[in-house]
Length: 139
Image (tube, rainbow, N blue to C red):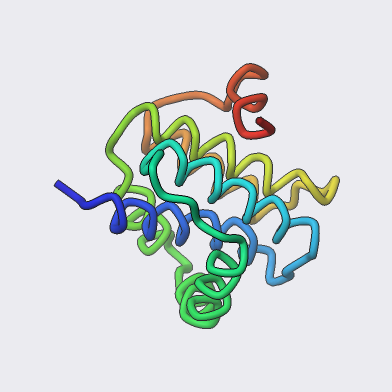
């Protein structure tokens, strides 16, 4: 069983990939990324407050490695492996809602983002988030 820190790191990697998958990093996506990590952290570790500065530092520290993994992942094996690190069904729904929020927050859902969402939906044997689940991410 994964520790809460390992779980949050896996979530962070998936959500950072959602930001970086289209080879752009927009401010609005970083705002959504930070908010999503804060929300999911509260779900995983309700007694731990994670400052935005620490979230952004983690992103900066891991950005190059995640970008490289994405650029070499022509068959989707890396994306599959990071998605498979999330086993809890409720957490998967939160992560999927966050992935979707990050993907559409710039009013543009491109092919790479869409394919990543489809992969998550397929692997996790679920559907896209419902309005109620999206509302959880907003607060």
